[in-house]
Every structure is written in C-alpha cells, then in structure tokens.
Amino acid sequence: GLFGPPDDPADMKPRPPVVTVMGHVDHGKTSLLDALRQTDVVAREAGGITQHIGAYQVELEGGRKITFLDTPGHAAFTQMRARGAQVTDIVVLVVAADDSIMPQTVEAISHARAAGVPIIVAINKIDRPDADPQRVRTDLLQHEIQVESLGGDVQDVEVSALKKQNLDGLLEAILLQAELLELKANPDRAAEGSVVEARLDKGRGPVATFLIQRGALKRGDVVVVGSEWGKIRALIDERGQQLSQALPAQPVEVLGLDGVPEPGDRFAVVESEARAREIAEYRQRKKREKASAKTAG
Ligand code: GDP
Image (cartoon, rainbow, N blue to C red; front, side, top):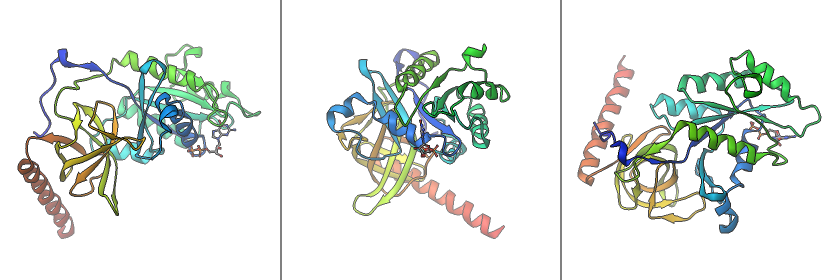
C-alpha cells in the first residue's frame, strides 16, 4: 500500500495532542477556540495567529504544545472519520452552564465514543448569573459520563470563554489527558497525515491544510493526497510564516498541489513525481468509474 511500514518503537518521540472542540450550537465552541488561540506565547511576540487555516497550534509557557482543529461543528469530525482519518486525540465537550445537555451535546458524546476518543468537559459560560455547573455534572450521568468530583474519571473544567476565565485550567486538563495517552510519532521519516481543509485560491491555486501525523513534511517533497498530487512549493503556518518543514501534530498550509483534495483525505510523501502522478491518475480513474457506475445503476 501507499502508507509506509510501522515505525520502530525506538524512533517514536512524544508529540503534541490534537484536540477537537465539540458541543451544542451557541454553547461557545467558536468563542473558546478564539480564546484558546490567544494563549499562544509565540503569537504574543510575533503578532499573533493571523490567518484561519482550519487548525492551529498553541505553544504554552515551558514549550509544551497543543493542536486545535479549528473547524467547530460535528460535520468536519464525521466527514474526516468517514474517510478513515483518525486525527483527534481528545474531544473537548463544551456545555453551557446555563443550558446544560442539549441534543448536539448528546450527538457529540456519541461521536467521541464511536471514535474511541477521551472527553474533557468544558463547562462554559460560568460567568453567567444563571450558570448551574453542578446540574451539568449530574445531567451528564444520564449519558454515562461521570466526572471526577462524582467519582468518575472524566475531567471537567469550569470556564468562561467570554471572560477568558480558567483557560489555564482547561489547558492543564488537556496536557494531563495527553500524558495519559502517551502520544508518540516518528518525526524522522517521510511524512503522512490528513487534510483538514482545502480550497481553490484565485492567486495561489489549490491550498490545503495538512495535519502531519508521522514524519516531517518538507518543502520540495512530492505528495499524493486523495486523487491529487503535487510537489510542495511552500509550507505556511497559522502565523503566515513560511516553514522549511512541519512535524507530527503540526498543522500547515501547503501550496503546490495540482487539484483540491477533500477534508479527511490522507496524504503521503512518495519517492518521485512520476510515481505520484501514476497513483493519482489511477485513483482518478477509479473515482470516474465509481461515478459512472452510479449513474448507470
Ligand atoms: P458556538 O455556536 O458553539 O460556536 O457558540 P459561540 O462561540 O458562537 O457563542 C454563542 C454565544 O454565546 C455568543 O453570543 C457568545 O458571545 C456567547 N458566549 C460564548 N462563551 C460565553 C461565555 O463564556 N460566557 C457568556 N456569558 N457568553 C458566552
């Protein structure tokens, strides 16, 4: 197959966790992602995270990093999973303290379960006078989520995305959960990963955000991604800076693809442009055959 052999355990190095924020509409996913973005210590010096690329990495005091998929809503999560891309290590379940469990909260819980991904509950809007965080905890019991204070092992953190209260507590909980997961990847091999977002840019052509899952992606690498291929012309991070390489759990915008891949498509570095073209053409042919079989049937 296209995807390389498993790595020698000796080559595996710790990597940052990849986090998806899920929850009911209006419970504060977007606000929380915006607030967390501002905890990045590098951004404070370098003028901030300047562009939306579908994911961002924050660096905390002491150099620890967390990657957030910046695609709120459950569609992206399910679409990626449907394409076989398992990119999320931890789900942060946002529940508004004034509203408690709602239909999309339940939906998010079942998505996280189906993916086998641990949940951290962020009880949001704690600043509101009608906030009732204890009700959230007890309501969660009906969905088999038992937080630590009620004798379970699910971490819960009270936050206010709006007032930026206790974001440190949430980041700590994520780092603790990540430690328990012992996340590792081999950074010294040809890169593989998944597409987070992709679009056609008028000036720059196809632009895709890749999440690196193994290895290091470098400028000049030749990749196959879904049924497209390309020679990586530029790697750009969420601060708009050009990189020479991107490492495991790092999201990066790539230029140089011949077409626009789809979220959840896998990418892998291959040895030559000829090989990349061959694989991409084969996949495009398969795709056309499938499409015409559908019309015929
Ligand atoms: P999403 O639909 O889950 O992405 O929710 P948003 O982030 O768009 O937030 C929905 C509304 O709740 C907006 O009006 C936010 O300003 C508000 N909101 C989000 N977080 C908080 C919070 O911590 N406290 C209060 N009082 N309002 C919040």
